[in-house]
Length: 72
Image (tube, rainbow, N blue to C red; front, side, top):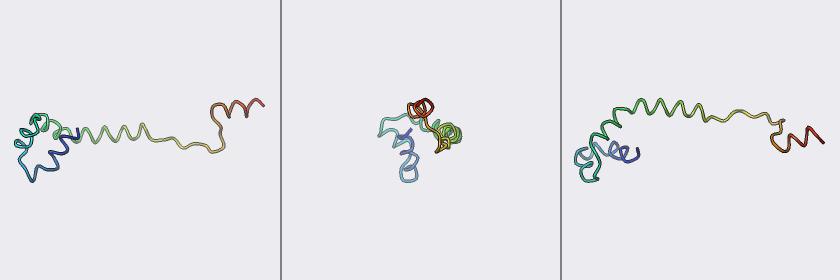
């Protein structure tokens, strides 16, 4: 979550407990998020592989153009 990333980036300048109290966030949520960083990175890598575009054949038509090319 973006809010926990903010706390993580500023934890050297401020105490985590104080930041969470001031911002009204659960400290336990931050520590759970921080503990699961490796799993999040692994999941993001898998999602990138799934979403990666396929190389397309530049000589192939799709959709309406393909139909009209096959059937003049």
